[in-house]
Length: 416
Ligand SMILES: Cc1cc2nc3c(=O)[nH]c(=O)nc-3n(C[C@H](O)[C@H](O)[C@H](O)COP(=O)(O)OP(=O)(O)OC[C@H]3O[C@@H](n4cnc5c(N)ncnc54)[C@H](O)[C@@H]3O)c2cc1C
Image (tube, rainbow, N blue to C red; front, side):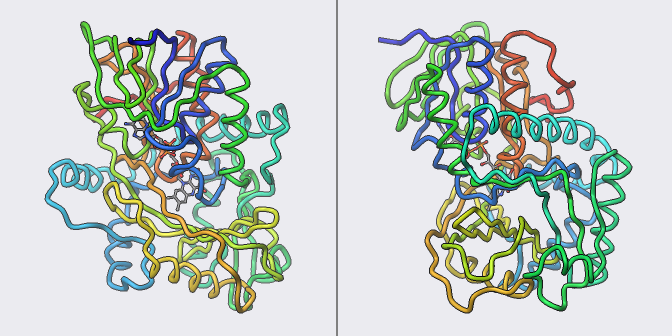
């Protein structure tokens, strides 16, 4: 028999769990279903960077040329793409190419900045209020550069942040080595985005899942959504592998799987999976002092208490979460080009996850025009951890018919 529920959330990653938390705080009842394990999917093994400084979307001028150049060196490339004639994939690529313009960057900055700052504030408040012990460190993100061209790009980004009233400190060679003693001698400069933070994403999400359970949410694992019944556009029934639900409202937060999870609702959600990898080890003798991003290689380094994690690569992969050992080796090699590391370390975990990526680099967030009791919250690409708490708050405000903290209309889910 179908179970009556208030809000049914589809997906238990960063976005679904944050939506659950803010909905519960706003007085709603929540059931969250996941096709696999909760707090374990694409959100768990990521770099753990909370980056309001990331106000420039992936779809920006010059990115296609850079990506093609990278692909000439497949062993070291931070980017890869599958060859496929899948019409949804080809259409996504075409829309992405069209979006790589200065106009798209200017259009994207205000909502990315608003959502990023709201999320960063919510992270600080949430971690403090709930006393989460997840290695949250509001000490910024330090970019390291080895070439003048990349350093100039970093300075340009710092300038863009200043124009938008956000902090970024440009560091010359002496200053960068003082800030990060583990940097190798040929690192020539850095930019420290001091408003950023880092944490252990898996630990944060496990604690968030435990907290929303305690607040009364029902979290159901191995309960993939397989179909819907609708009446005049409204979703009346959601079928899952566990059971059927009759929700008042539905939140779609299924990450890279969102187009599949919404199948049957007639929505156009151009989300492609962009796979990335991480390797995690016990703390090394020579630990970096803070969260780093290795400029030319686009590899992230995150100290997580007694762990150290390296993260990298973006591959338009389809829904494939297999770990490719040669890319894990490539990431480690890249890290050794920038910082001092123990000669040998024991890898504790290798991991692959899928970034849910839209053609214009902005999330899909808002009430569906087609299904008025559906809120879409997906497409956060490389920022789904960072933008989680702000997205959760906006979802709760939209669900309760309140004025959202900022105007999310540039993110409306059916804009394509
Ligand atoms: C290598 C790497 C590094 C990254 N580093 C960072 C970082 O430092 N900072 C940052 O902000 N972001 C980072 N990201 C991006 C971030 O991990 C993603 O944006 C984020 O995981 C997306 O969260 P989500 O909740 O939308 O999706 P997910 O975490 O993928 O969660 C979606 C959930 O939906 C479930 N699901 C799917 N289909 C169904 C269905 N039919 N029914 C029910 N449930 C379903 C899945 O099982 C999954 O648990 C990184 C990503 C990668 C790959």
